[in-house]
Image (tube, rainbow, N blue to C red; front, side, top):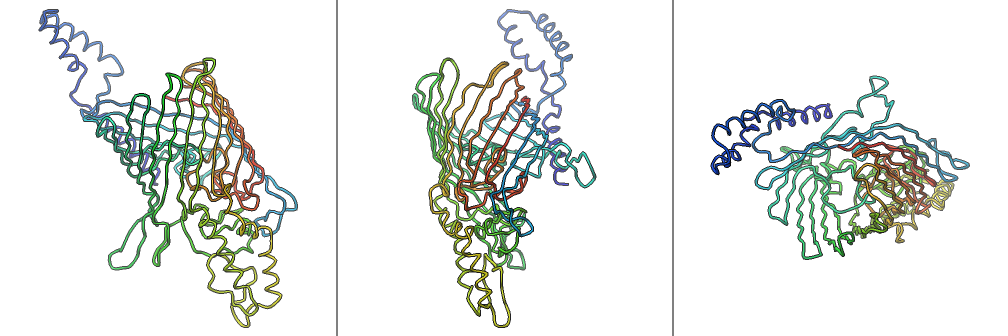
Length: 542
């Protein structure tokens, strides 16, 4: 129902924009004709004849059927349609835990072959007095990091389902160019930060406020950006101190600050680099409420197949073969990102080297959530213990009544604590590769006109505790952290605005002692040792 309301609202807004007004084409030319009469170039009668001819000719064009509201200075329609064939497969390591609680004697592979499409359609433009606006809708409101609709998807009504095909507003914003250098924007907006897909999926549009400053000093352009985004309203409400009660559902906020510069060596060569810092507030649960989907203290039963040791990494995350809680935890994140690129021409071909590096300054604390929970459970694993009161880990053998744990019970539990999976969690998160993410690559060519080609190759590594798992790109590495690999892509413009792309990616685990948690919108396995992706796209931009 919400998606239907969104598209109806979008249509209503578009209709309002184009409501007829008295500002006609003929009136636009009055000033010019009056000036010609005043200078004696034409007579009054000639002026009337020209105006009548122009009015008649214009009335027969399509443009004459649309009259813009007087508040609108300019309007631009834009969007894209993408058709895609996609193949993904992921292989589990030997001994991975099955959903039934057993183990695979050898690696198993999950493969997905899908035909998909995505539609995005919007309007944007200028208002008077340096204000601007934008409205855009996209398909599949059920998955914000994709917009893809899978052919043959079935909903509750049967085959050829339409619930993914619904359009929903993904951008609604207003902005103001306060000065030639300073811009303010509010609403759900295009990402204001200079970034890469390693940290931000380009389908995500943050909601809140952003301030941007940009100034050019000779050959150097300097810029600074700040963003304050409402990340998630707890329980969908964001209510604090409700009337007649003590409920407290705090909103979660994301804050970003970035500074950077672009140095132009000549007309074809420049360097661009920046540093951004992202922090969060409102990530802790409260006595009377919690931040929905972002934090939980629910114990994970590590004897269960769907919540196995290899997928347990603390109260903030618990991705398994089936979706468990808190794969999207954002506690203990203070991320520095430094994207950069060098653009130049070689043999007349535009080229660029690009890279990005991100580091979570609270990665150790994030990993400690897992280590402390395991150590806390281990401390309760003694003869006579009732093994109660722990938050984070439930012992495979628990005795909450009578004499408590026996010596055989303790021995069984120790097998778990001494297993490679648990020892891997206890000893991970301390090294740079678990705490950081990096991307480095090369691109040659451009897609501007018919016949253009573009090629890209890059390597990317994303540590388990390095970045916000909710923001990373879903199209390439399965929206998963703890993955590293190479991406190859080649694109061709068949005509202006119509292009095709072939893309292949291969990845493995950064740390084979940790899982590769994801949101199960694509491959559902939570521990991927080998990953392959192939995509063939046909895209029309308008």
